[in-house]
Image (cartoon, rainbow over the protein chains, first blue to last red):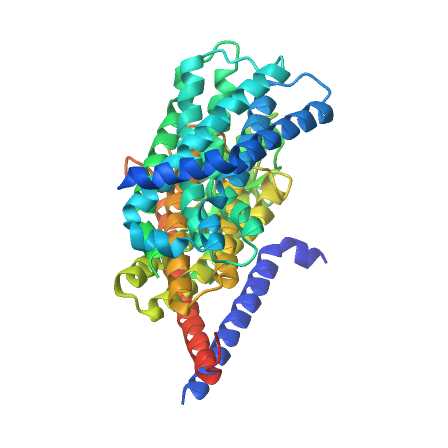
Length: 39
Length: 218
Length: 304
């Protein structure tokens, strides 16, 4: 736990990265599905 | 071309007195409710907040029917054939403005009668911001009531649309009213408010005038 | 990339910050950046350097058990100030020779990074509402329903970014002002902005008319709504009391009349990079929204 306390910035960075990756993957998938629909 | 629309509105109002009597009742009921709900001495900030809340809801109830009634009576089409959109807009706006000004004056009288704390210290300042505030309110409600005339649940929709849009006006006007009721009102304090009110009113009237024909024509 | 740098770039101040924060009892250690000068004295694991901070202030700096420090290095680390004998001590080193650093804003510390997300989000929200309004004007001029779809997409994006700015702002407010919501003038006006644009979609749904008339009415509302946006976003927060910078008649840090930027240059660069990134993200979302709606309308021809 001490490690987490001292490096809380990295924890924040990891959570933020996960959220952003989630958003990007979601949008990519949406984009692909729409492309299929448009055909 | 403006005056026939205005005259028609006046005549209908004088015949039915729907708007004025309902609004005056509304004002009295609200003031009595406030007086019973608040037992303590009211500071100028509370007084100005209550005053403007009463005015806003009063004008929304009073002015909301201007276009809805045309749709309900089926006279909208006739008005579209008979008058140009601009003259309909100015006629309705001036009528709404007169109605809201008289409502404002009535509210001032009722408040002054019922609350001993309602003491205006600087009359010029008070009436300047009152008139600017009422002009803005009338402008917003005129164009919004034209927008919602053909929507479902008009009664609930109009306040929902109007109150957030009125927010810049609410901030400026409550601040100016509070200052005009303070023991020594300072003009420096209200200069920003008056400027906001004035620019907001001018912007709104111009934009609604330009856009009205798009809402009005089919 | 920019997000990574926004999060990982160290925040560091100078000796004055360390002394002041200690005296105020805010923090016992403060991140500072110093360039180490010649070692003055050295005895059992403790070296005393003559160090210069970012602002050119030169102080004596002790470093205990930090053996790999040499004079000539630029280090970022935690510094404590001893008010008793007015000495500074470096307790740990987090980075040496950093390429870029962010300034320490007193009272914000690491929380200051949030500026790089919170502020670009509200900028992009404004851009989105502007785009939506331009589309609405185009709809009224050209009477083409595709502009209605575009206006809706842009306003939806604006609504999303306003919500995000509100969320990041209230989390930030929890940690620097104590509560999630303070009825600060900017908080209030952004809430009102949210209500205005939620009302736009409500109006669009409740209209009972031909598709063209509905589009026109919604466009008119959108334009009127945008008339209030400058008042809500720029004017009211500047003339009323506010916890945000720029209230109380002070000059705002970024958008102001004199055209100057009152923030650190590196910080400003990242701020604008993030604005561009969020703007691209907004554009992508808008594009997706339009495509989804178009596909939806094609598949269900009876759709209104």
